[in-house]
Length: 88
Image (cartoon, rainbow, N blue to C red; front, side, top):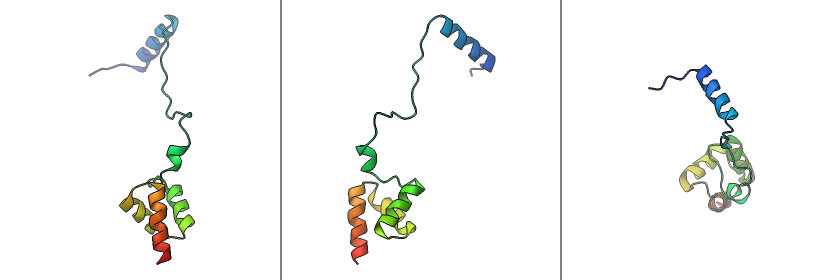
């Protein structure tokens, strides 16, 4: 196992900085990749998304979650299935 102390990590970072080594920093979320892909899906694990979907179609939250679980997260498919339910 590797046993590296915090002081060793800080020291190695200082040495790398002094040597001019640039570290690539990965962002948690690529802000340039926003838009269509996120809007095509309903994030079933996000309560606010499920709440919005349920309110949009006049469904109970539990029923909206069941639709997402059954048909996946494609918004067009879910909208069509929700419309079928509301017409019944």
